[in-house]
Image (tube, rainbow, N blue to C red):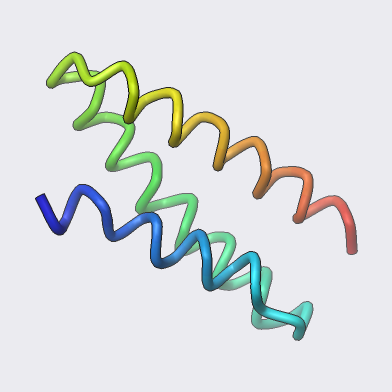
Length: 67
């Protein structure tokens, strides 16, 4: 269960990082973890988790563009 939720820690770290260079790296790391978690959620049929990850991925996309 913990591994499935690791993406949340990475996502939050990316959101809080003020340094643009570090933020970009954290976004990349978070996106990788989120894509893995999304794959697991799809395999398990966890629609709540899929929705949460999809929203978070969308927010990271906005954050990436807001340089």
